[in-house]
Image (cartoon, one colour):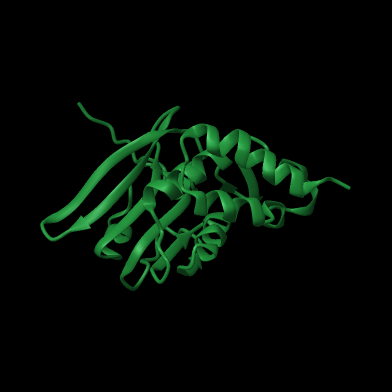
Length: 188
């Protein structure tokens, strides 16, 4: 029987805190939350490894480092309304921080209805879909990894009165979600 409590503590100490994640709320939530419950039983031993872990066909949890850095930049707050797209672990951490979370699978053909203070996705996309940006409430944030090549960029979008701003945060390499790949055309 694996000692998952020790693995959680080690994950926070070696993969989260060492990556300049200083939000103590995130540390505490990640120390308490059993990450192994979000992966298939046969992959529980990978839950705390420094790797993306497939939890469903074509769906992966971000590395602990990446999800913690993305959460810190997104700054989920108690009482906020959050949409978690293909992000079961991030959703659980955000719920532990006091936000109301609606979970859905990221679907390129489905528009997320509503206005959200935060939209977060644990898979990469070539570019943030317009529908996700439209789902942001005033001052809402979208935290996602955009990847169109070997290395992606974690990005934070923020809706302001005069439009939507985008900031690159850090390099990340999660798999791109099916249906969200870059559409490269042929040009002369």
